[in-house]
Amino acid sequence: MNTRAEWGRRTTTASPAKGSWRVANRIGDIFDSCTQSNGRALALLAIVSLLAFLPGTFAIPALDRDEARFALISRQMAETGNLADVRIGTEWQRTRPLGQHWLQAAVVATADAVGVRHATRVIGLYRLPSLSFGIAAVLLTFWAALAFVGRRAALFAGLLLATSAAVGVAARVAVPDAALLAATAAMIGALGRQYMREGAGAEAGGAIGRADERRLAVIFWGALAAAFFIKGLVAPIYPALALATLIVLDRSPRFLRALAPLQGIGVCLAVGLVWLLIRHYASGADWPVPLNIIGKVTPAFPGLGAPPGAYLLMFWGLFWPAAPLAALAVPIIWKARRLRAVRYLLAWILPAWLVIEFLPAKIPGYAVPLFPAIAILVALAVERGALALSNTRLVRLLWLWPVIGALIAVLALLGLALFDRTTSLLAWPLLLVGFFALVAAAGAMRELGVERSALLAMAGMLVSGFGVMQLVVPHMRSVWISPRLAAVASAVKCAPEAGPVTVGSAGYNEPSLAFLLPGRLRLLDGAAAADFLNEGGCRLAFVERRQEARFVRRAESLGMRIERGVDVDGFEYTDGRRLRISVYRKPGG
Image (cartoon, rainbow, N blue to C red):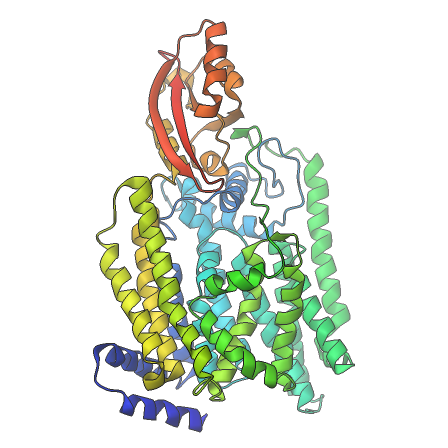
């Protein structure tokens, strides 16, 4: 630790007085001061996490399809009081885990009770559990890293995780990925302390030792049980693969004894039994039926069909800006693979990585639980000084900082220009500042050192990330079709005797529309949409152009007069196609 601190001070003194380097050194000084105590380190991690995760949380509309489906189910729970039904419309699937929905429903119900307007349709409220889990994952990664490295390197590992792109997405999207990430970080820290203690030959026994072991066991199994209830059957796969690998490598399960495996497995089975009983009794219970949607919404994202190696390619974007550092650390880490700490962390990464690479469907979120272990390994390499004078050819990988950063910014601005014929003047300065920070970080690695260059790159990511997530993405009106349709429906004035507007949608079945509409939604085809309008009452029909011919023919056969309102044009990003949706109603309806 002293050697590392001296190296950091030498770097500061030797740096020329250039603007970007002065900024890097100022950031480095803040970092240095926060390494003096755990409290300061945790405060810095919490602040950086909020800066990384908050932009866009309340500004970006509900995302199709997984997030909107989760939010819609939670909305049904909050409105009906039925905390066991995880169906949407005519679906009968009851196998989804309940934990995330319960948390979201509790947040929304609380917000509604304190007077938040239209709380059940504010997507930012449904994202608050994910935001909390994202911050918890960063703090728990710091705690887990302390089992293997000093406070300085542990703080560095937490910052790597907080500023990674995929973690930022998981923390601002209303799905349970951030919960699994936090649980995995807790399990890595709890099991890692016991594993390192066993390797050091510490003697068991004594009141303090037994109490500490019980605490670690509670953390490990509590995190696994919580992840199981929130994320489902995928949660136990990561610790199971790590444990099996360590047992094979050590040729002994002795390190597990202190974690009370039988009791812990019993707790997880009890959680599974509770889940099963809730599903069983919910199917026959006289709960209120969620009538806000009739029909079948578009199914959830099935994953990308790609060959093995796809996650290795996605990693550069998912773990950006820390991915180049991870690549730099690979040769050093592999040479040190026999060290107990390195072996333990690799056991959390490699087996799970191989398994997900050979899955037929590649879901990016499956790689995210591996990031705490990867961040700790990178921090371990930095702490040992292994990256200070790394392979000069591999150091060129750091230029991916500005390349990927520029690619993200350009794609965001290009999408805004192509689809909406506009740009964001407020975002441009932030994106330029972030880009130049990334360029300076990559170009000044030898002068600033790995640690301070990485800190400057993280700062650049935070600046450009705010520009993209808060000032560009929310204003892409063409891709946010559902909010525009919901605004049309909300503007309709119905007669008091007709009740609230009922909407039918033909050809556009995205769950975000059902989530945002104030009234009921019926999902139909073109002909059925005409029958729907003919039933009378205060009704609107959203008809996508591929269904329009069937709609018009059926309306003519019924002899029905229809009124055509506005056309909503946009780009459906889930299927990659342009849409034109027309709004119809009966005159006087």
